[in-house]
Image (cartoon, rainbow, N blue to C red):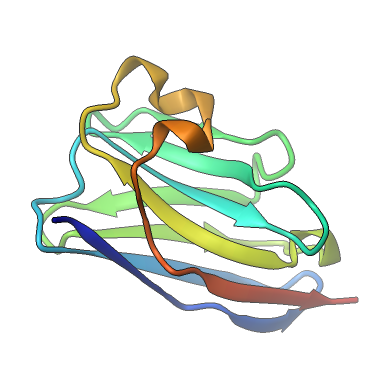
Length: 126
């Protein structure tokens, strides 16, 4: 059964950068669709970015132009490069995968993803 393990979270000042990494364990490259989601305290979980196996990417409006999702199939890793971070980006970030998801990959719907990592905390101070 596929497992996902995130790393790279931490604390940074506004305007700074962080790179999150997600390693796919016990599977091959996560399948067709992988994504990043986040949950801030007191808020619903929201989709941040997704990438399909053909390279197509989708971003939430709130992170467009600042975040970049990428996948390294040779290393079985998923990354999220986060630049120009804002205090409102503070959240627990989760890596997710759904091997069979294709058409719906870009909808950033958490209910469509069946495998999740445990999360990594990102804190942005003003």
